[in-house]
Amino acid sequence: MVDLLIKNVKLVDSGRTANVYIKDGHITAIESLPSEVAAKQTIDAAGALLSPGFVDSHAHLDKTLSLGEKESPTLGEACENFTEYVRSMPRSEFKEDIKTRARITARKAVLAGTTTIRTHVNIEDDTDLIGVEALNEVRDELKGLIDIQISALPNFIGDLKADKYRYDQLEYVAREGLVDYLGGAPHLHDGTADITEQIFAIAAKYNISIDLHTDEHDDANIDNFMHTAELTKRYGYEGRVSCGHVTALSAVDDELANKAIQMAYEAKLNVITLPSCNLYLMGRADKHPVRRGITRVRELDAAGVNVSYASDNIRDPFRPIGNADMLEEGLITAQVAQMITRSDLMTIYRMGTVNPARALQLDDYGLDVGKRADLVLIDAADAAEALVNQATRLYVIKNGRVVAQTCKEQKLID
Image (cartoon, rainbow, N blue to C red; front, top):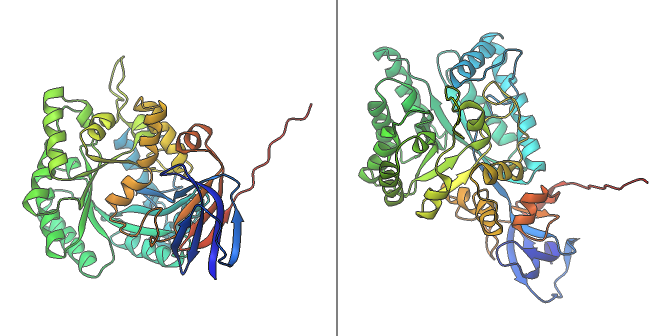
């Protein structure tokens, strides 16, 4: 007897119709013909699309739902307004505040079909390790619904003593296993190259992977992206480094961009584009024509670089909208990257599933026998239709257990 049988599904990767058998949290069989195996629970998909769960590779659960009254149309103002939000409450209350907000957004993501999410968490003067502690507790609390990976996002201020303390904090969270990745936004600080090298050195010391915010600006300067590619090869970290945003790649000329993209391919960098947030924050100083403010998605993908899209900020000073919905983010990505032919949409869909799973090193992810049963059943015929229709996520399955169900009924009344 199996725990769960999902019959009459259309498999997202092959398009064939099959029955999927799940036991002890894993896929045990995928068969085209009915089996005599009994099941504790059966779902008749009636031709709906079965896909591996969505993987949101770049979020900020410590900031989510922190939108205040002040508007913040630029990245600098967003940083200031979030700092003001943090300072508006007693330090003793901030941990529970993060947990409450993160819990709401994570649950919303589950309903939308996300089974794994990687969140950055600030480490700075006002919060120290409060956010790290809070998200570790949320991760443990919600582990039956969603896997949460945590990436440190330290803030540096250019003071030798203060920055030494920040590096000590990074060593501590890496050594104690409180984060899954070391990160940061070196391009926002003086001494960008030194900060990046320090992060690599600490990561290598504790054998922890890296997830950086990289060249998120409008200037024709991608030094940090190229330096990161060099360091990745120097440290033997191929496949273990993610670069988020990289919006400046669209500001440089084609010759330099092509060189950087080749370097990224050789270093096996994972590039994560965040269009919904960067459309809002980038290009603010431009006169018409205003740039879209995202990286070169199509060129990176064509060169063989592993490209993903993700949600980034959700209803906070950095982006006042967002629904923790990867199909929604995927359609935005497709439109702004001008990738909306049928074949393009299939590529975009992979950027929200198998590509980020690779970036997050999820070896047991996928729609194959033996893989963990983290799945989503979608009311669509294929991946392209799922994106275009923003299709209903009928069932979400985590570790072989149904954790969410959505029933959607619409009718016209004449």
